[in-house]
Image 1: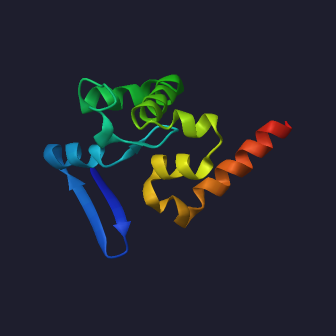
Image 2 (image 1 turned 180 degrees about the horizontal axis):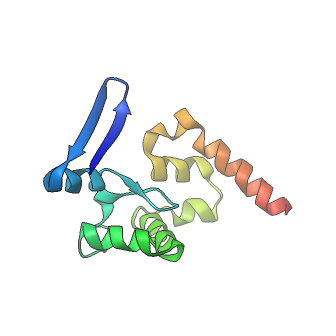
Length: 115
């Protein structure tokens, strides 16, 4: 198996074999919440492979990983207070503004309120 991860036009990683596969699965985002694999331990999974297996099993476990991430990173109050900038920054780091994640969250929230 060969995987290629592009971080920028100038920098990419090609993954081959068991050692690099472990690295690549750790730097990959998983599930509907796009939780990074390297968070497996702080999120309470026994191993990286246990985390990955959960992501493959079903959407409920993918949502659980997202819930764990939100809890561990103390983002619950940001959600409760509808502080979309704080939530976006905590979930996506300072790069959130580049992709307007906070604005996308506001728009999605308004859309679902209207339905």
